Image (cartoon, rainbow over all chains, first blue to last red; front, side):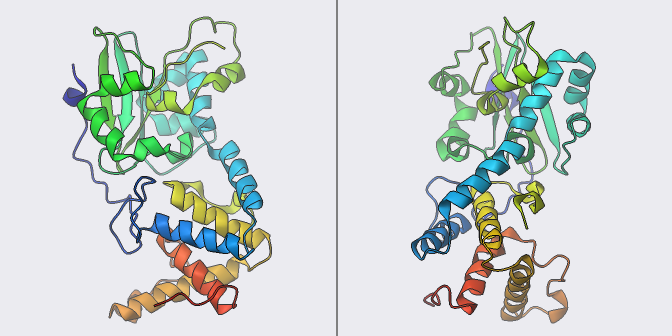
Length: 220
Length: 91
């Protein structure tokens, strides 16, 4: 099965607005000069130049935010799923309910897809940059790039290889197209050699890229 | 206001996070208050509604009008210009 076979196109991306008055999607790549992203960049630079904005304070604030709201929630869910079969079943069948058990709630629909010996999952947003921010933090710049969005569907194995993930021919690569209607997160395979690890230990080895599908986890 | 007051549900990308962070940092620094910023957002939305020829009945309400992140950067500039902290932007 190819990535295109499983691609989930045709979603409504209307909830992902980016243009100041419509248009654009706030991508970090090739930022259009009249986009909100460019406006924010210019404004931030001007505020710093005039001494109105303390970049260190801003960075501290952002770091605090990401410590609390980065991919830690996704990592916690993965670690819990690896150690609690009932939670895993709930995560795969009703991810919002599973995240709610961790105290994480959001109105966005999210589906968690499981890596197995037979299937490797990869997440992309082909139209813009839909991403479950609330469990995976900020999306990486490459996730929003036109190149990744196009190639992840067209040649997922080649893209994965560039991330250092070699998927054997006998293992299916399944590509999931996130949208404003539904966003995807990967439940990666638990690394061998972690049988004695605690849930906290396991959460610490989960990477953001593994939640997207562009990383394979290994025991520390 | 602290960063804990920011609703992560509204963040869907980097520029959204950045402008929220900028506003929160300036509020924490005492440059203006959350109420000041909220008012600036409301005024901007109301002005745009008038410019677009929309009915004033469609103007944002106090409960919802400030929440559009796309307005945050221009509203912030407007607020800082009004306080002479930034020069007026070229038309």
